[in-house]
Image (cartoon, rainbow, N blue to C red; front, side):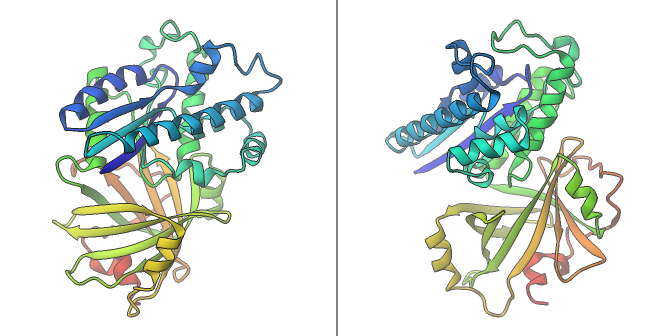
Length: 361
């Protein structure tokens, strides 16, 4: 049985409500049982619990995150008892959305009171799909009339949209869907992105990789839409030529664990199967480490720019260069780099710059 939990988030008036209908139709047709966790903030506000009815905004976020977590537990339990091989749990906003409405200090206080942390909340979802608010690129369609809990102006909606993207930056599978083209095209792109992530019909990963000059770490650390992630990657012995690895991923002492199996299809296309591990499973698999390769330790800077999601890997054994990776939904997608990133060359097909090769150095 396969249970996948994703988040559909976005700025005010981004099309989330319509998106849920599209997701229901598309993935039910593909054989999934599709479950929807309703937006918690709207439920609370329409029920009389709001930032302006409580003593402080952080008190509202405590209520929201606590209720969100309990709802997700209920849906996950229900999913385990569904008579389906594939279950898709779709969360209308996730626990980290609240970060966009608080200062960093207040949000940290909220997490402490709930005895949790950003890594645990963010990476509990398999993927995050952000729909850009109509206030950015389609302002003529922006309205507050279809949601009694929505009060933001166009300017405020645009600012919140940026903060929401920043809140989720650092997740290993974040996709930003803008307002290019008409609304129907936006919905089709969302379905295509979710389908690609789920591996319908095949779990292909389309990725391009570039060798870049060593980035300005102070600049990366200063921008709100960038998040530093610590990664330790260990390659395991494999009998059939697949690339098998386990990965510890997180920051500030909070980590999650994955196993990834990759099988090459072409230069830029691979089958990739990934599953979440418990800490004990991770430690057990480390006993099968390929001793001919060293562990790869790196700092990954996750950066959103022009609706693309860049992952910039900085290695301790290089002081003049780094690697930038971009996952794409199509091999023909245009890539626009931030002006601060200086590309040396594309190395997508260069085996010497693969992590598996770097582990042999």
